Amino acid sequence: MTQESAVRVRFAPSPTGFFHIGSARTALFNWLYARHTGGTFVLRIEDTDSARNTPEALAALLEGMRWMGLDWDEGPEAGGDVGPYFQSQRTAIYAEYLQKLIDNGRAYEQDGAIFFKLLGERYTEFDKYKNAELEKVRTEPVTVHDAIRGDVTRAVETDFVLRRSNGDYGFHFVNVVDDIAMNITHVIRGEDHLSNTARHVEIYRALGAEPPVFAHIPLILKVDGKGKMSKRDEGSLIEEYVKRHFIPEAVRNFLCLLGWNPKDGQEIMPIAEIIERFDFDGVQKEGARFDEKKLSHINTEYLRALPVETFCWMAGPILAEAGVIDESTGEDYLHAVLAISQEKARDFEGLSELVRYFFTEDFTIDSGARERVFKKGEPMARLAELVPALEQLDSWLDSDIDHAILGLAEKKGQRKFDYFPIARLAVSGQAGGPDLLALLRVLGKERVIARMRGFAEAAT
Image (cartoon, rainbow, N blue to C red; front, side):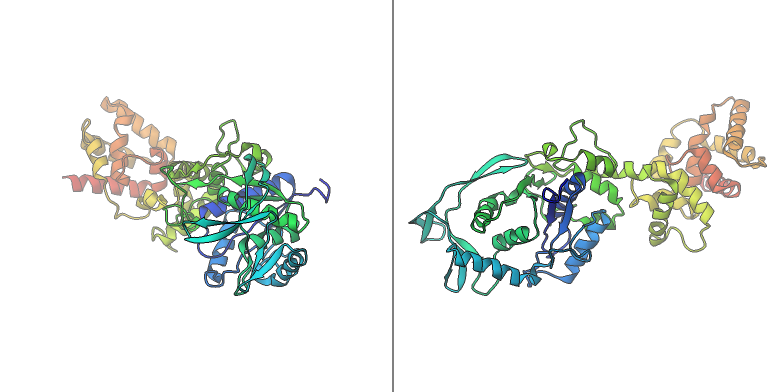
C-alpha cells in the first residue's frame, strides 16, 4: 500500500455520557477496517459542547475503548502529526477554512452567524412547520456512492450554518474540515448520518477537496427490533458489561456481528480472523437487532475456552469482592475449585453462587434439587451406606472414590449412579455442578464425610 493510498479512518465521539454500544460498534468497525487494510485508526474528540462534555465522560470513553482492545494510532495520549485531536483546540484551523469559503463567495454573514451558500436558483416557500417563508435553492442533487448502500442521492435545499452567532462552529463544517485536515480517506459511521452526507459533499467541493469514501453502517435496533437502541435501553452501555464482568473479547466479537456477516454463519472467531475477513461487502444494510441472549452465549463460550490460569486470575478478585473468599483461602485449593468449575460456569457474574459451597459450611440445600433426589429410590439409605465406604479410603483420588462407590454398588445390588445424586446434594446442596468425583476430591475426605453426616443428621 502506497503512502498516497493508505487508508485513514477516524472515530469522532462527543464525550457527553457513558460509552454507548452503538458508538462502540462504530469505533470497532473503523478499527477493524484500519487493521484489515494496514491503515491508520484516528481517535478525534468532538468536545465543542462545553455544557455537556465532561472529563469523566472522556475518561469513560477512553477506558471503554481500552477495555475492548481498540487501540488508536493517533489521537489523545497517542499523539500524531495532524493534531490537535480535540475540536476545542482546533478553532484556528476552522477560522482558516471558513475564511477560504468567504473569500470564494461560498459563505456569508447574517445576523452575526456565517452560513454556507448553495449555488443555484433561489426562491421562497412557506414552511408550515416553522410557519414562515423560507428561502430555498434549486441545486443539483448530490449522488454519493456509499461503500455499503450503493448510490445514494440527496438534495440540499437551504443554506446552513457554518458558525453560529455566539462563535461556535457547526457540526457539518468542523466535521468536514477535520476530515480534510487529517487526511481521512474513509468515513465509516451510522446510517443516521446518511442525511448529512450531501451537505458534507457540498462543503468538500466548495473547499476544492476530494470527498472520502463513505460507508454508513446499520443502526443497532432494540431487542424487539422496533426502533433504534438508545442510552436508556437496558444493555446499551459498555460500562454495564464491565461491571458484570463480561469478557472484553466476547463483547467485541458480539459487536462485530451486529451488522456484519462473515457469510459462512460462523459466529465465534479470534480477532485476527475477524480482521482478515472484515470488509464492506459483509456489512448489511438493514438494522441489526440487539440480542443479549446471543451476547451471553458468546461470553459463555469465551469464558469456558479461557486457559485455566487466566480463568483463575480473572475469577479471584471477583470472588473476593463477593465475599466468597478472603486472605485465608488457600491458593492451591482455590485453583482446584475453579479448575473443575470452569466448564459449568456461564459467566463471572454468577460464578460466586456457583462455587460458594466450596468455601463455607453455611450453604443452602436447594429445595428443587432435594425434591428431585428424594423422588427416586431410597436416597438416605444410599447415603448411610456411602459414608463408611468412603471413610475406609486411604487415598482420595478420583479413581479411588470411583472404585469405592462401584464396589459398594455391586455389593448392595445397586448401580453406581444410584449413589451420585444424594452424594452431590449432601455435600453441595445442588443437583448439578462439576464432575462429582472431581467435586469430592477437591472438597477433601474430611469435609465430604462431615457434610454427609451433617446432612443425614439434619434429615432425621
